[in-house]
Length: 211
Image (tube, rainbow, N blue to C red):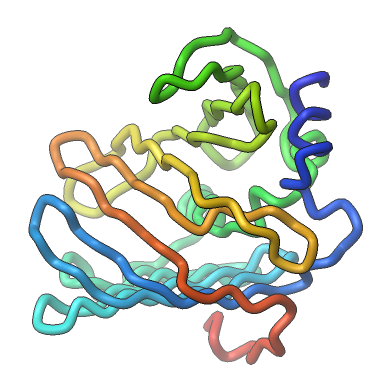
């Protein structure tokens, strides 16, 4: 509870309902392939989420999580349906999911240790909830902000992989601190770097965007 309170004091939780929705635009870089593209996302506080990636000649990708079902669309699989645990897992990609109060979003939160992450002292939490894999999250002792999130993520064609999201470049969006840079590390598949260039608080959302 003390570590979660540290995150709350740091301003990483939307405890006052300041972000009902969020739109982001930026760049994405597939480091191992030397490919750069554009990405955008839409997120709602009710759990809906959409991410679109345009890699030009290398194709497009989309992940859509509606209230009851979703889909993933890429060169690996067209219109792959997301339901049940896979749908809930897709919601973990939404920045507004992590802006929730974790004590309400997760059933159990345990401090499992302390270590250094990229030379920075961090607390390590294990968080569990029904419908999604357990999450390990590293919290900066200095800032109280999440430095890394790690969980098992389903991948089409490769099965489940332990994926690490390294978070940095925190900026306030309508009073809530959100990471604008994410380095996603996939075992044996390299690193993807996402950088927001624009984050818009509370845009009007078209329900059709999540269908």
